[in-house]
Amino acid sequence: ANMTESPPAPPTAYDDVAHRGARGTLTLSSRGVAFSPEDAGAGAGSSVVDLPWTVVSKHQVSPSSHPRSLLKVVTRPEAVGEGGPRGGKPASHTFQFAGRAALEAARREVSDRLGAARPGGGGGGG
Image (cartoon, rainbow, N blue to C red; front, side, top):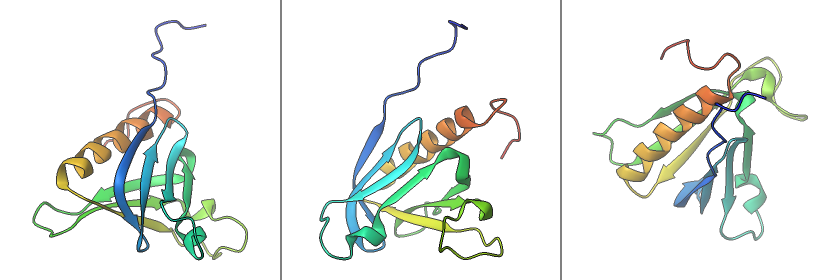
């Protein structure tokens, strides 16, 4: 085994994040992106997100001039599960953070984890 490989970073949970109108926690782990609403009541199921890094194609954040701190995660067209739209439309999930600092931290972390999860590591730029 290659001992120089660093262990995967522990998951990071970002509280006070909103997705589809539901408040909850966004968790970034070595496996992927997950969002779980605080209130798991009726209708909350639609706001649950569980995206492995293998299906994430890119992520964007709103510009600093934007009034809200938004992180957008775009998934690959072929990643859509059963019952999803066919025809290869990429899906996107938008998460609203409480503040810019948390957004920037999440953006960097998504970038790092996405790079680490890709075969060959790094490269590709952008």
